[in-house]
Length: 459
Image 1 (cartoon, one colour):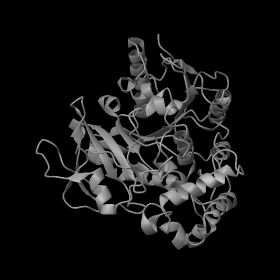
Image 2 (image 1 turned 135 degrees about the vertical axis):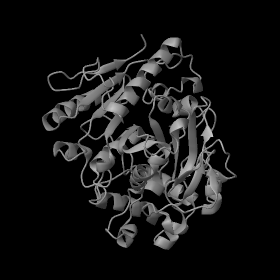
Image 3 (image 1 turned 90 degrees about the vertical axis):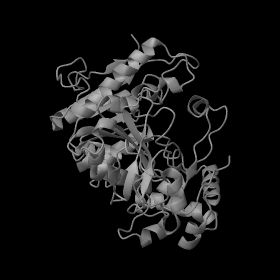
């Protein structure tokens, strides 16, 4: 499979993400880190979307395999009307289930220059720094190898309509995001390497905290949520000292509770994997590694995977003692994760039948540690059409209310379920309770004595 490599100079790439034009009087100009921006109205006409806002410098050239750096300033007003590049990743395979389900319109433009985010906000709150709307940051899944913040299932219109500002992010994936190597560790001030994609997520969260008031958002009320590898990322963000104090609530979708679905290796293990990949490709110096074309790096990854030396995912967040000092399960047991309300769950036909056990175990543990509740759910709707399953990721159509983008024959009952789930998710962002401000609503906390799970299905 070929990899599309869009590695133009930083200025040209940023111009693709957000072109510069004269601002329209009816569209307020916002001032954020880096300069001024304008958005575009969504189809609902009362929500503004800002596509492709850079939240860090392009991680290219000498910045490849370094922590995200401050955004490069621009002149004029950026018209943020085009999605930013997704991270470099392989093309999706025709005929494969997820390709046919989510990528039937083709792949996105991809580049090493990928540190962009998108914001949906009510038009009436733009520029009103005292509006203090709740904010939600979405981290996409994709096994740390694929995905973007503007997938066909993802849209913030229904969120903003309900009074919650939604931010979706792109971050470095695969070889660009999670390669560790002894030479990279040697040049690092803390003596570690890798986890660049997680550092990107932290940078995006800090960007939101510093800039979201311009959109009418409350920097002290940020919910972080994600699914699959995105949910594993949420576990990391509520664990890391770099990010957990910026989190007000957290939603963890389809990655379980206690127990690690995606195990995090130690620093030396991650370094050894990276060194073997690079040595086999003849890339034995930092200069050669940073000069290598993405196709060379992808080939090195493929050759390493063909050896069968590592089962599972070799390029993932790892315990480096700096950004991540311990796993989520260890931190939860030690009661050092963010002390916030949590909501977590899975789908009926998810990849791990035992996922619910770890969720209930987390609820029982938190009950002994905190007054903040844990809410659990299971998405039971087996989608109409073939295959008729509640597959891993199937809930995304509903909690973004993007059923119209799907080719499946969704019914009126599906749209009702989507509205119900949208209310639950946005209520949680507003109040830390999916019932809203009704603390004694139908969705009960998950505790040891009552491991309540909300079953989400059509009526």
